[in-house]
Image (cartoon, rainbow over all chains, first blue to last red; front, side, top):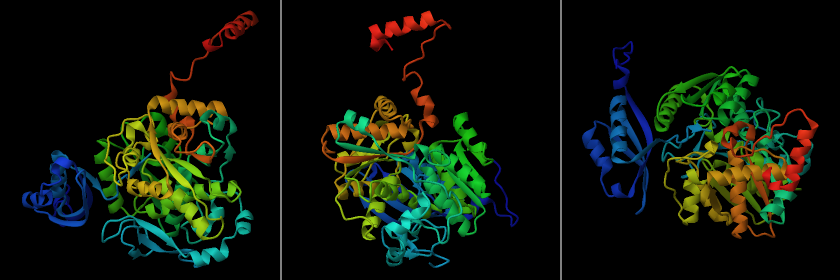
Length: 95
Length: 420
């Protein structure tokens, strides 16, 4: 897919941006250091703003900063592992 | 009244209490907690008396001091003050002493309680200088934004999943809204809309306008109190999608008490969900203060939110007020719709069937005592979800234009009434 190029020559995919997310970890992933792994795998800045971890569920509000392409890839990676990833604006779609 | 802020003081984080200016913003920069409107209750107390309210027009804006607009409302000025009906026949069928129906199935102009929240969001959006409004929706919200924006001369963008039924799409297109169908899974559509909301300087009613938008729901609670003769009902049963309406009904009762407009009374707020999407009710029944996200599969599409944004707060309200939650199957939802229609002549959408079905369960289990009084919040009109009833409400009996055939039909029915 062609990437849109801005007048200054930078492609939109590589523009730095921040995304605010809520992550929900299922029980089997609660003890795994996912945020650390994410930082190793993708050139992104991770910033945890809130977290609540019990035996049954882990909830983390996370800010990711970096290129749009890397943020999208990181979200895909987390979802593949079984983490529910939502924008902070969850329920954007209402009935 | 301050011309810039009205009776509002600030936006306040529900988690940490940090305050923000009254702009189009909805998340605390510090902990990502949701922002809520904080009011100057001392000034409101001086202005909002029972007689002042009663002297105003019969719409939701008669409680305008407690709704987040700075000046006079400019959108949806006739919304609200829907009927509160004493439902004696339904009370008898459900086995409770007294029952009331708050009927937002006839709310103006688009036949659902969403007109309340949208008129607040759009009035505030105009005050903040927006000329384009937007929402992502699969039904009632889209209709309401499209209709109210049209009447206010605002440009509207409505985002929908691309596979939405034609009927629902027409309901927004007819008002001249820009309807954009998005191909993709629910999660992808959700994330794209969050991105659009962040990038374009539009008033996205349930994203950057959410603190104002959500406050509109309180008007349903204010009206219940006034229509009951300035009394808080012992029990209120509320359908839950995101859980926001339940928390706002509770807030409305608290505010009216704080202002001395109603005497302090014990009350319970109960929540209703479809079994096919019941993260909040499952958590409530298990005594948990958090919910687990689910994938919705229910005919009650207007309640199909698997990750409810206000789920945590709804659980808290039920705990604080001694309320309970329950859920009902698709068949029980249809039974609830039919029961309300047959007993009270009110045709509600599937969400209303959920409310009636759950009320029946809570009364039968004694969680709502038979000797008490309850209000059911009916939030939308049955004409919007006709598909859910196809094949489930009997059938017409056809005859030729002959009196003899008609009489034969009546005779057959008299002999065997169940055949009808």
